[in-house]
Image (tube, helix red, strand yellow):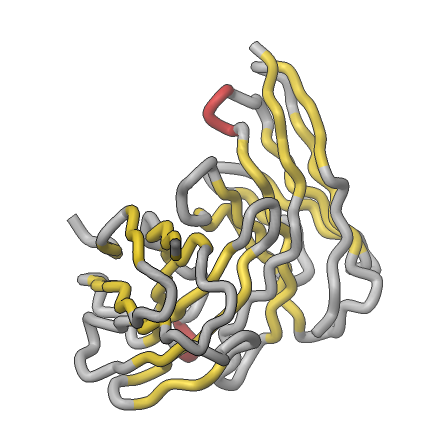
Length: 114
Length: 112
């Protein structure tokens, strides 16, 4: 089945530690995205990538880093510089250019920093 | 970015139609209107999108006002599985801008 996988579903880390969230897609999509969601709020864009080896900052990139070495993978690192890292993190992918219609979302990773 | 305004919450009964409104008075001529929904503890799911004409798909219908300053998502027969937060989003067309800006959306409760 085609889709987006995120792992793990729940993640606990101690304050001050960097943590990397995984996102993989087998939809052959060029574009991938990372969003953050806080309780009762909408999603906010952290980073997005339209093609391999290229990515752009979204609205709240501070304290986060990404890489896009393969088309299928777009890992997100939450660094110790992120002041409030506890949140629900969602990865998405889409076709690009004239073929863009919708974003497909993964199931999310709930990160709790203790 | 052009903004959208939605009611915080709505309630419906199972098997009845649901009309979810969205105001977007500052919409520009090239903005598409997208709807997504999010079930509890899951990622959002695309529902429908349109530009000027009304649109139908297997999930819902989208009715767009003639002046495009408002739109309505229509669920023809609500089921318990339709209980979710519904987001109305404007997306600029063309170029390489695929950014979606999510507001708080409308929490739809469906009563059995």
